[in-house]
Image (cartoon, rainbow, N blue to C red):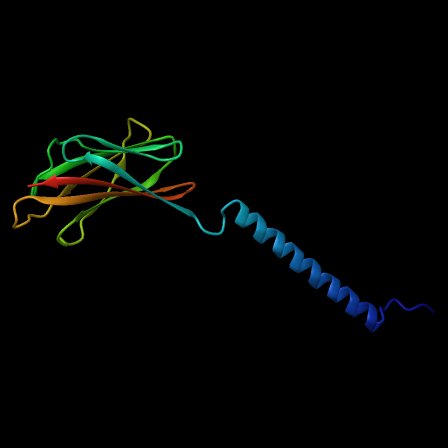
Length: 162
């Protein structure tokens, strides 16, 4: 009669081999995920320098893409509704948000979620209202935040408003 059971030494060797194979497979998966940035999404920050988005459209350039913020209503003024649009070229985008903050004074939270335009890919629209400042004129920062397949993009634009 033959025995189909493994000796305890063979069982230990197979168990050790299985554990080592599992560790090797996990290491390969981790290296693959790290290589292709699957562990943490990339976050890109851009700034449109020397441009007043309250006066004209401003564009920030990334690596192969651009983001343009424009006040469609014209001049940006406190306590007046302002229609904005964001044009994204060269990269897919979604969940576009505009965050408006006073540069010298905290004016409270002021965020607007933009909607994609039905007539043009990469175009997003929204409306916001700036709070009034007691000093008359104030420097503001408009930050466009968006999700892309490559991660989050944050773009900052400056402007003055009365």
